[in-house]
Structure formats: structure tokens, C-alpha cells
Image 1: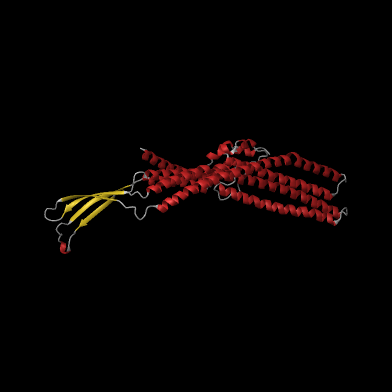
Image 2: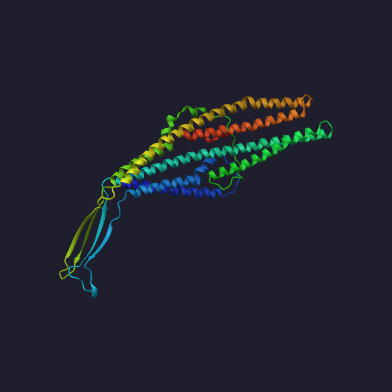
Length: 436
């Protein structure tokens, strides 16, 4: 009964793979429709990645492969057909007296406990593959969010840089008119052209970043290109710091990396137990029937029993390797836990810092920069400030806006990292598209 349940489990994994492949074909057909007809949101990007990402599909296939290995490991070896003859026909077709021919079968019986351990080792391999699949899904969602936020930020950089180019062009034209009218020296025009060239250079760089970010996102969601697909949403300006209230002691034991490491250690311990049984021989039983040659041609029945003697090979090296693998698995489990704790501390600090910095830009730096620009523009119109003063303030304000967008990107990426570590209270994708 237990073997039947295990067989059904393996068949269910294979069926799941076929269903996933069918879903992939359907989505691929849908993907072949007109490009750019619908905006791509964050939740859409995540769903597409989970359905189409080739690495995730490969991880799912590894689970099926592990289930197949586990199923096969519990099976006994096939019986052997044996054909035998003794004192066969001599030259001329004459049969020697006493010759006999037999037909039989032989079956190897594994030493008790070996196949049970083989099955448990196989099932541990399935659990490791499942944990690795869960980890890959979690990492994929994090990577998609990061790439999606990078696209939004890069496009916002392009918009801000484009506005800066327009302002610089207007300032350069104004300076040229002032020089032509004799109201300013030539150096004023040169001073106005320098920010224009800088703004154009920065705009070209941000446009390249958009292309790179879109290519990264397309690769993650399993598409060849996203250049014609609009991406909807904006970067969130606030973060959910309550995610940090749930410490690592709550989510660390269930993190897929820890689950995979601990299961690998369990598998190593099972393999050590299996290696200790290896010197105990498997018994081979055989039975054969036939007839003897000669005049009476009487029937015969033979029984055979054979087993290896573990004299030369006592599996000492295999036991040593298995014991070392247990130590390796224990050390790797500890290392993974420490790495996750370190990643949590780093991501937590990054998120807190990003929240403080974005709030500082939003509540203090940007309002002061905008107010300074407004006052300088009024003062310039009334002759209180020079043209160079206006250029400096315009440049400072534009740089503050670009810096704010960069801090928003850092905030959103930091929260995505926190959610990947502790996904139980993760933010819904729609909340990432809050109104700017």
C-alpha cells in the first residue's frame, strides 16, 4: 500500500509538469499577440515570471526527476533468466552420457533495511528539490520586483532629465539672446551651454539604463523583448516597517534555504546509515529445472544460493565519505542560517535608512529646493539675481529630484529584499503602484 501511494505521488508530479507545460504553451500563444497593447503592471510581471521563467520551469522538472529517482530506488532488481547446459553435444551431434540442460530464474534479495533506506534517501532528495524550487520562486519574485522598480526609476530618470534638458535649452537660448543684445558677456552663454551639454549626456545615459532594465525584466519573465510594452505604476514613497517587527526567529526555520539545508543533512545521515549496511551481502537465490541426458532422461530440479564475502571491500571509503558529508551538511546549514541573518540585518538597515532619506527629501529637501527656485526666478525677473544664479538653482533643483527618485528606488528594492526573506506579511503588488 505504501509503495502504491508513493507511485501515485510520482505520477502526480509528472501530471503537474504536463499541466505546467500546457499552461506554458497557452501563455506562449497569448504572448504571440500584438505587443504593447496592454500596460504591464507589477502583479502581471510576477505572474508571467512564475509561468514562463525557464529557470523556474527547470527547477520544477528537477522535483519530478527527484521523485522518479526516489521511486526507482525502492525497487528490487529484476529477476534473471538462466539457461544452462552441462556436457553438451559433442562433435557429430552425439550427446554425451550424463549431459543436462536446465532453465531457471535467479533473484537477488537485498539485505534487510537497504531498500527502505534507499527509499528514504530518495524521498529526502524530493524534499530538497521542493525546497530549492520554493527558494527559486521566492528569489524570482524578488528579482522581478527589483527589475520592475528599476524600469520605473529609469523611466522617471529619463523624464526628469528630459525636463532638465528643456530648461537648459531655454536658459541657453536666453543667454544667447542676452549676449546678442549686448546685455551679457560671452562667458554667460558659455556658462549656460555647459549645463545643457551635461543634461544631454545624462539623458542619454538614463535612456540606456531604461533599455538595460527592460531587457533584464524581459529575461526574468521569459519574454524576448519588452521594448514596446508600456510599464504601469510608480515607485512607492513609503515602506511598511511593520515587516521588521517579525524577527528572524519567526521565519528562519521555514525559509526554503534552511529547509533545504536541514533536509540535505537528514539525507546525509540516511546515506551514512546506508553505507554502514553496504558490507552486509545481498543474497542471490536461484532455481532451475531440466532433464539429464542419457537413456532415462530423468527430470532434475536445482536450487542455488550465492552471496559475496565482504573480505576485500568492506565499504570503508564509502562510510568515510558519508560521514564527511554529514559534517559538510551540518556546517552548510549553520553557514546558511548565518548568511540569512546577516542579509536580514543588512536589508533591515537599508530599508530604515531609505525610509529616513526619502522622507527627508520629500519633506525638507525638495520643498526647499522648489521654494529656492521660485524665489530666484522672481528675483531674476526683478533684477535682484543674475542669470548665473538662476542656472545654479535650476541645476540644484533638478539634481535633488533625480536624487529623490534614486532614494525611492533604494526604498522599493530594500522592501522587496525584506519580503523575500519574510514573505508571510509581504506587500501586495498593487500597493507598490500607489499614487505618486
